[in-house]
Length: 537
Image (cartoon, rainbow, N blue to C red; front, side):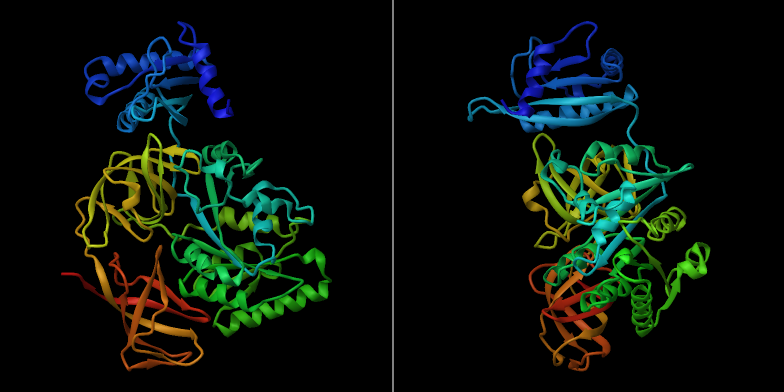
């Protein structure tokens, strides 16, 4: 018997008892169980189960009153979870976890599920959630530094804390937890709120629930062949700051320059952390710091050594022109208190109070829940029950959907604001119809699918010239699509800036004036800004 199946068997063995915490339900429906006095009665029943279980109740769904495995179809199971969620809210509780199993003989297979319900309402999010995108060359200590930050644990010299950022299959067992944010910690009035073990979703959820201010890290890939993934992480998310790492034993590399270029192309306020200072002499640290300063001045940025000028100056001046530099070691923990203070005090920059908009980064299907779209809320806010549009589809149309539920860092939430990395369960669409690069918008929006747009572009690197019909991959929000370029003057040389018409090769997307993008093809790279759009007829 599998461990998961054992959970179901234990719940069935315990059975329903007058003073117990287990409740059997075959199904719940909105029309029957939320009407008249049934809602209040069932909420009181749920509250009784929670009190009997010292703050936790177990609801077994898809079974008869005597514990027989009846099974229900996926749509009925989804509706039952919706109703149970509303009852839990009525009882000042929330559904913490759901596990499902298939029962039956294939032709008549149904679902049975075990829902764990805990006392206390769902997490209420706030406006103090800072999202940081990390970048840097492979083996420069990026993931190790973040692992030590979020746990407060020194590294052992072999990258032990780096393992905390590995995404394991069990972390997304429910499917509602977005995979973009690989680490999170927070702050309260007493200082940092660390994660005991970032590989345990319950530990991450506890930080999200208890901290007054959250810091999420979108960790990117340092290998040159995976620059596309790095661009996706930095361009496709609603980031507040960039954290570029440079190892003291290696110094700035070509990849360092590439990542810095992407950070600056998106106008992201950036901090440089010089890592592994314990591994070299003070003279070498000074030499690398001067190299970083030269690199920043080459791109017209002003370096600011935090050790010399202080955290107050860094917080006041970081932005369009100034890039603070911090010396760190994940082994000795030198410099990590400085980063803590910066992340605790830096203002949120990426918040947008406009209408709700989210670009889909990935999608998946969850048994009993349905299609889930994950990504970063780019503007506005979204609530469970909202009616939205998703698209454009390949033919340019937008489809109506409803928000079934929202989850952030393994914790269910009622709503999510700009900057939140979330998984949104959607009713009214199959997961197979959702593609990366699609957008979620309010139902009353009037979006225009765009196949072609005008842009101001700058060529950062190219072996020859860019002429009509040049086809790189364009990274705009979470879109990563081949597109043909038609420069206004017929060609663009390395270092040139100019106007170009850009046309997606395969399908339309939602593109708006002012959006930044990166394009690349092999070692050829450039950046651009959308200046005008040509909506499809």
